[in-house]
Image 1: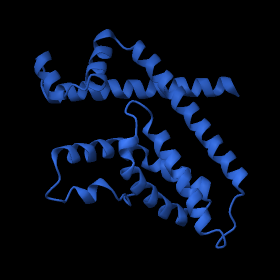
Image 2 (image 1 turned 180 degrees about the horizontal axis):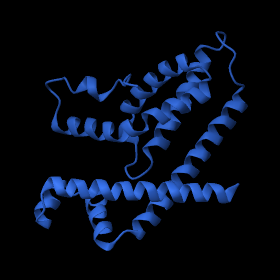
Image 3 (image 1 turned 45 degrees about the vertical axis):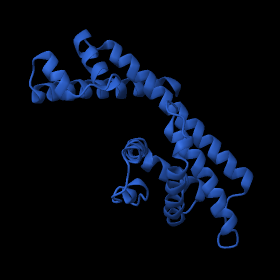
Image 4 (image 1 turned 90 degrees about the vertical axis):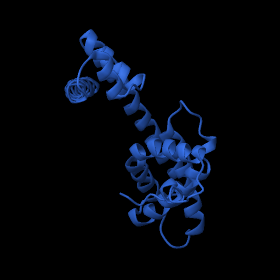
Length: 195
């Protein structure tokens, strides 16, 4: 889904300042991972995949315009989801006679349930990931934390550890595979226990 309209269009401007460029990069880094989930959320609320594309574009523009209101350190997806909910409501007002739409109370219920289930999934995932990182060998755990929490580049870590970038990248890939398998097992066990 590459329908995104936003900072990419702005990046072509020759007059873009360093601050605007950083802002566009930050927005893209936060937005890109949640684009598909946001589209699915909009489809659930709108009940129409064709309309959802239009609403997503509208949402993208509003997110870009309101990006300064986003509080760093909070969930960007939650911020985007709230903007999308209002864009769906606006779409419904404009197209009220064009289609059979969910009643407003039912739309609110669907939005709330979708939010809660997504929050529950995110919470369970993060708890599983934290537990799995805690099970890693000390050197692997330290490497993962320094790379992804402290945001050290592969190049700087490789230089510090006296390893090649390729060897370090392979180690990180191995650790990520281990973590992914651990998280999947943990979530599967938790799901089985809930049933």
